[in-house]
Image 1 (cartoon, rainbow over the protein chains, first blue to last red):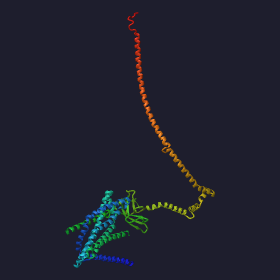
Image 2 (image 1 turned 135 degrees about the vertical axis):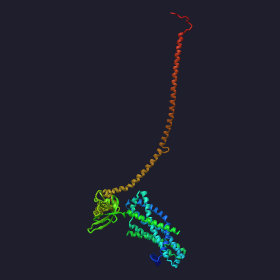
Image 3 (image 1 turned 90 degrees about the vertical axis):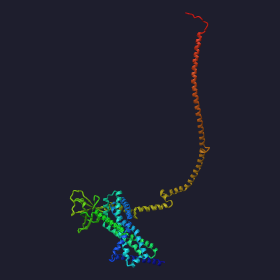
Image 4 (image 1 turned 60 degrees about the vertical axis):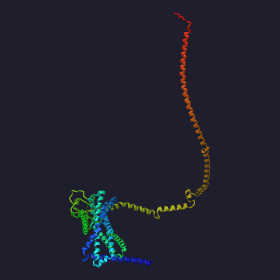
Length: 262
Length: 313
């Protein structure tokens, strides 16, 4: 009984280790191909344009609306709370840290993961089940440079740009709220926010966005490539991929927070 | 279609990057990245509470930041302030610099300038900074209170010591309680001798019988009261009879009232009748007097036929 349990734990650990090893090899191959001279940049660019269109442009209207709503409401709540607690001195720092560094990347990543990561996972899984990836390989086309690299770069770029856009729009809409409700002038608000933004904050925002963007695109691709050749395994692949994406988002958040505290 | 997608993607990227660059430039302008700066030097005995980037304030407004903190060979802490040119006017020769460490909030350097007409502060000068430490001030104020607490704690310790008076008092109290627990202990303590205590105990023992007797007497008294109550307030008791009598008397009085009213009416009628009799009597009197004068006249004229001649004088 006890032996069976230990075997179960051992099996789970080996499975996870194999998965981690395969994933690391996949990521290493990704970077090797990305920086390889043989990679055809033109093909990458074409697929990238399509991916940016699906990931960012199609989502833009909804994303901007969400940025304005969350920015206005959230900054309003923060403003009133901070004012009531008598912590007006830290108002700028609180808004910048919460909106620009924490909420911006997180909401952007969640929106893009919901929309694009699941789509990428499904697309790659279907291609795998249909044997399309094998066909590409048999024709001598490198699936990494043709299928995976453009998607990962596009999603990472979209997360970076859209996180920054979210932060800017949320801070701007926060100004409208603070002006109408608290009568804070544009000069005072901009000075408050600008003085609270440091180069380090911008760096953290960039690193966080890039890391999250990278993981929410490469994890679904990896799960797609590992799908068993049965159509009923496609939802299972997407389910597992999305769970891992969510875990990756949390791990990146926690790691960066820990680094910031250190 | 593909060209359209390319255009949309391109537009999105161009506009996004333009917005990001514009925001970055705006932040840099607000943060005085492109502004000319003045640098002032301060000195302090300690670097405690000082940090790079710390706010420099004038009249509650931020006018600059601490750019650098250095420890010199002499052990003096040198503080370099970075002030945008538009705020340099607040820095004069007579300006005083204070490091404020508030109880709540982050420390800051405060500039006060008593005379704004004074010469501008030179960047080569080094001014000593004073420190106002709210936390230490609070500790200083709290020190006497803490000392008092300490003495109270010592007192409590003395009081709770094995040989302390309080412990002895408690021991005595315990002894008294033990004595009290013994039979007759408290009575002996209160009366002072055993005989009185015994007498009191005998009395107390007889007390239940007395109480029983008192109870019996009270119950008898209750029966008597109940009977008296029945006699006085019962259906055939005194009070209902008196009530009936009173109501009868009341009825009689009412009848008597009516009778008196009738009598008054009769009296009134009689009074009217008396008045009529008076008038009649007058009329009769008048009639009688008329009759009397008529008789007189008749007498004077009698005999009517006897004297036909009248004698002349």
